Image 1 (tube, rainbow, N blue to C red):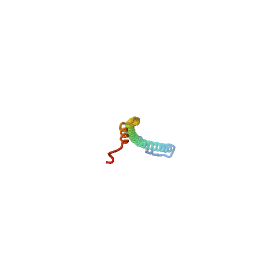
Image 2: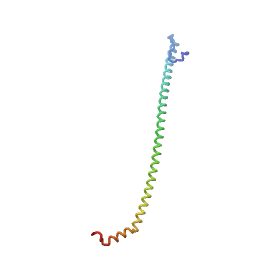
Image 3: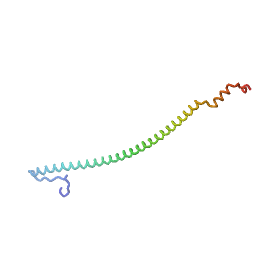
Image 4: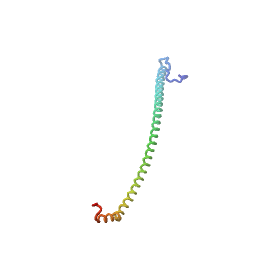
Amino acid sequence: MRLSKNISEKIAILSKDEIGEIMHTLNALLSDVASALNNAKDNAIENASVAEELSSTSLQIGKRAEEEANVVQMTTQEAKEVAHAIEDANAQSQQVKALTEKAQKKPSKCTTSLRRNHAQPHTNRAK
């Protein structure tokens, strides 16, 4: 065991006296240590696997967060463009409103002319 450094090897028990009992206890202790080391190795392998999976998941989350940030940025830009278009439409409607109000306050020559024509007898209609 000393040369091979394999703690799972058992020590040969050649006697049934106190030395034999000590060797038996030492074999049990070495077996427990070997079992603990194997469990630690298994846990280390499992932890490494979980760490790799978490790293991969973290990278995917990072990429998706970046994509979502781009979508939000594009949506914000489009919303600003829509807001500007609404402001322009509002300004144009205010101009139309002002022109309409101005037109309603000042009778045009056309309206006066229509009233005059309507008041005159229509001689051309009978023909």
